[in-house]
Every structure is written in structure tokens, then in C-alpha cells.
Image (cartoon, rainbow, N blue to C red; front, side, top):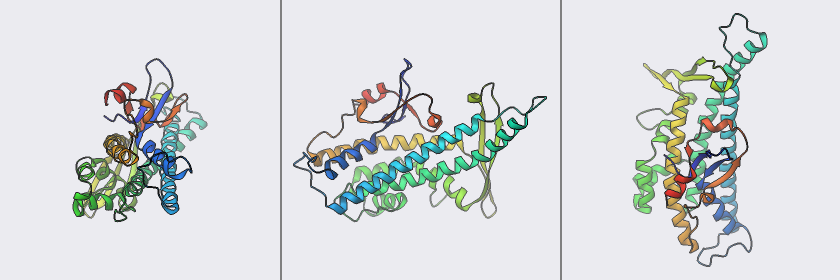
Length: 297
């Protein structure tokens, strides 16, 4: 399970927190490079104005994409909670309309989650390319960058190349490979549709939706792929990958600064934002604990 990327839920009823360690690595580098007078690290090679603008823009894109991803997950939860039991002796017109709208909205939100996950991967690739002094690292596509590190130039960064070889099943599930279509590719290129089965609970929060893709993925090949469970698995595996990524690149950037960039024993190192009240997007993200974070050191 991930340690630095996901949601914490304190047992004492305190605030939940969202942790996303890689964002804090990028933010620390932005502060060191982009703000006059803030670079207190004599071993850190200053960037040019164009390099700073490129990095700040890419980080902004990653944060914007994450915001859209999380909001889409919240809207999915809103739609799920609007479903009512249609088996009762009398169903109001309002309840029937709310359920019908929810069943139209849910496939839309699931499609968007997959699209934003794919965009997030490419944002990560762009930022990764800027952590190296060389301008030869591919930056437009996570897939292209993965091929470059694992096939063309594994000696460029052997540790990261091994991570990409061994910990990117999430990307295969999402975007496919030479042998199989990913979920995102199926909804964009395949003749598939989203089918839903639902079960109303005793309360809206207990509503259950079973979603899957069904259709023709390739000539003479039918496919049935679960959606919500697959998306949750993608996110968990992505967060596990980001844990390894964060440890690797925090050490790399820290060495360039001549300091320990982030102290992973301190939960604040991976904290992005606290959460007030219910968080509708929590179904998407894995759960972590501050104990996990401290123990990982």
C-alpha cells in the first residue's frame, strides 16, 4: 500500500488529510528556483527564466488536472447518492427523475476520471524530464518517456528505469500496451459502452453501483471490463509508484541542493491539504495513516 500518497482518516475524528508527496518535491524546487532571493542552496544550479516558466507551467497543469480529477470523483459520488430504490409501491416523479439523471451522469464521470488520469501521467512525464540537465528526455508522453528509459537509454538513470519496468502495471491498465487496450483507449477508440447495475441502500451513502465496459474492443473480440474497481486499482498502484518516485527524486534534487529535501518521517513532508467534513472523492484514493508515513523512514 502507498505511504506518501493518499487520504488519512484520523481515528480520533480529527481532520482528514490528503498527501501527495511528489507535488511537494516539485513545489520545493519551484520555490528554490522561481522566487528571487529564495535560492539559499549554493550547490543548486540556477535555471534560466525560460526553464523556470516551463517548470511552473507544467506544475500548474499537474495541479489543475488533479483538481479536475478529484472534482469528477466528487460528482460521481453525488450522482451515486441520488439513486433511489425503484421497487417501492409508489415512486415520486422527482425520485425517478433523479435516479435517471444519476444513471446518465455516472458513465460520464467515470470516462472523465480515466481521461484525467491519462493527462496526469503525461504531466508527470513533463515534470520528470525537467529534473535532468539533459534536454534529450522525452517530455510529451509518459509512454514515450517510459520506452526511452527502459529500452533506449536505461543507463541514463538505472534506478528510475527499473521503477518504470517493474511498477507501471497501473499505466498498462489505464493506457494499454502492444498486446492489450487500456481502459482509456477502450472508451476513446473501442466500440464499447458503459453498462450499470445498481442497488439502492437504506441511506444514499450505502448506494452501490456496479459499472463495466461492454462491447467490441477489436474485430471479432468482445470485452467486458469492470470500471470502478479497476479505476481504484489504477489509483492505488499509481500511488505506490509515486512513493518510489518521490523517494528517488527527493534524494536526487536534495543532492543538487546540498540538503535533505524532505524528511519522510515527518507527515508534513507529504501533506498537500487538510479536508473539512465529508470528501466525496475519497472512493478514488487509497487510505494511508500518519503511522505508515513515519514508519517508512
